[in-house]
Amino acid sequence: MGLLSLVSNLFQAYTLVLVVYALLSWLPGARESALGQFVVKLARPYLDIFDRFIPPLGGISFNVIIAIFVLRFIRDGLIWILAAILF
Image (cartoon, rainbow, N blue to C red):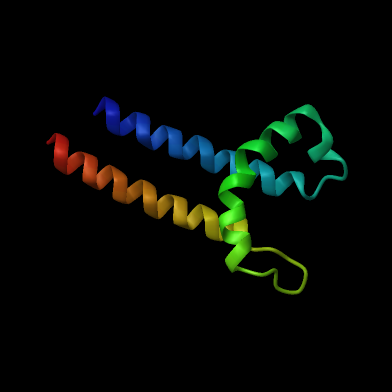
């Protein structure tokens, strides 16, 4: 169970990065801080995939929410595959 827990925890940590990224958009100047820049560097490569295909609706981007759902779907599939291989 160690590998499955590690994979699950890594996906949870990245989900937290995405949530923090979304919260930083509500705070003026937060993305310019050292923490904000670090979070942006972690989150943007993944979110850029969704920015190409999903435009903002009414000036509001729902890409972070969709990205989290896709990340959860990938996590569940990967854990299912690993469990089938390992057990």
